[in-house]
Length: 143
Image (cartoon, rainbow, N blue to C red; front, side, top):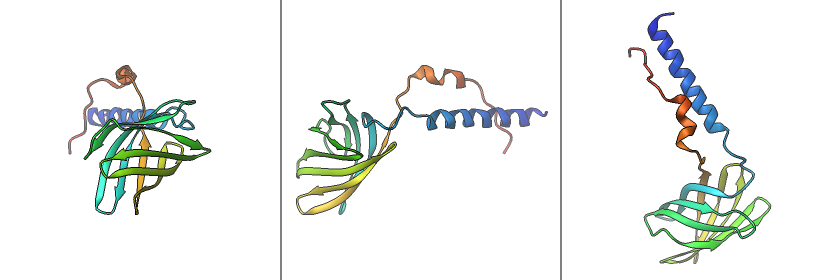
């Protein structure tokens, strides 16, 4: 087998392994974990990273928010796949009302008379050692 072909094969195998690793995320039936996504209303849009704590005292904490300030915390109400929480913002209380389907959390948000939407995806928690089997030199074919 020519060297270029072997390199492409090894690279393809590495990509396949990483894709498989990503698809095998932890049990997505739980809401606990780190979620990233956006909230959007009228001309306003914000990126958010949320940390949802384990039950029984489920809560939401804003880890990162751009633009805006991180650090807001709120209680989380879970009813089946329905999820509700409120976060304080400089403009007032923002109410999030959505549902979880696997590793996706989507829904609507409301601030005063305005309505918008939000969408979050679960981040996969991993340790750097999880990628150790994939370390190495990879060579791509010309062009």
